[in-house]
Structure formats: C-alpha cells, structure tokens
Amino acid sequence: MNRLQPAKGMIKKSKRVGRGPGSGMGKTSTRGHKGQKSRSGGGVRPGFEGGQTPIFRRLPKRGFTNYRFKENYNEINVSFLNCFEDGDKVDREKLSEKGLLSNNKRLKIKILGNGDLKKKLEVTADKFSKSAKEKIEKAGGKIIELKKSNEEAAEEKKAEVTEVKKEKAEKKEKKSNENAEPVQDEKKDK
Image 1: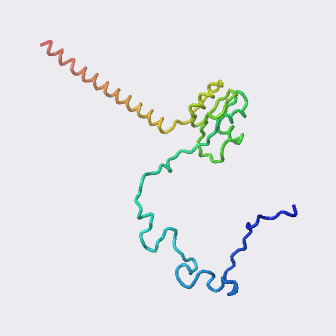
Image 2: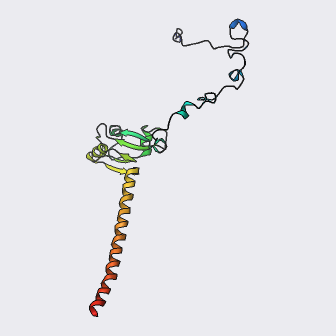
C-alpha cells in the first residue's frame, strides 16, 4: 500500500503564469502584447473567422435529421427475464427493481429476442421484437403492448379514414339510388 504511485507522466506540474521573468511566463503571462486575445475576458467564439463568412455558412445545407423526434428505448433481451418467477407480471416497476432499466423514466421499454426464455410470464412493454413475441408466447406467456409505434398508429388511422370514406360513398350511393327510383316510378305511372 505504501509503495503505490501514479503512473509516470500522470502528474503534470500546473502552469504558473505571471510569477516573474525567470519563469519565462511573467509579465504578459504567455498572452503576448495587446490585442483581443490578451485582454481579460477577451477572445472570440468558436467558429468566428474575423468577420469572414465562416465555414459553416459557406457550406451548403444538406439532408435532414430526425433527432428531435427519435424514439429511444430501454432494450431488454428475453434472456434477462429468466430472473423472474413463473407466472409473474413483468412491468416497468418490476424491471427497475431488478436493475434492468436505466434511471431515465422517459425512455420506453423494448423487449428483444436474444437468448432463451424458460419462464411463463406476462410481460408489459411499449414494444416487442418479432422474435421476442414468439419466444414469450412459446414459453406460455402473454404480451401486453402499451403503445403502438408511430407507423402502426399511422396505418390504423389510414384504415379508419378509408373506412369512413367508404361509408360516406355508400351513403351517397344509397341516397342517389333512393332519389332515382321514385322518379322512374312516376314515369311508369304516367
């Protein structure tokens, strides 16, 4: 214990400026004479090129980013679910008790299919991979999916809209048929 030492080159002497001419860092304290960079609080922001149009404005914009709308998940493999007892209901609280989730509560939970599941569990999560679904159901368990992905929700909405359109079209056809039939009857009567 008493012979422990930091590795060679780990500890570096701090740069002491403004401590006399003998050090080579006295007087101007390595800042040089005059100018914006020598003043206290002086200097320019990163990317500033002295008034010249900076590189980030000279280059064209290209592509797009989905960063703001990206969905992040706590990913848990099926093999980790073996730590629960048979017939357990596995949800966010139980997973965090076992230390399988990160502390970020905003992250959704996704169950992935790596490994084998030997327990019969009722698993509640935001998303499941195809293989995870198969393995949980094969073990005799149950899946409860909390929220559907944006794509699935969009598809469902599309389906609803098309159904509503079909219904409207059918109603229009019925009305047009009803309106057309009495006119024909009147002509027949005459």
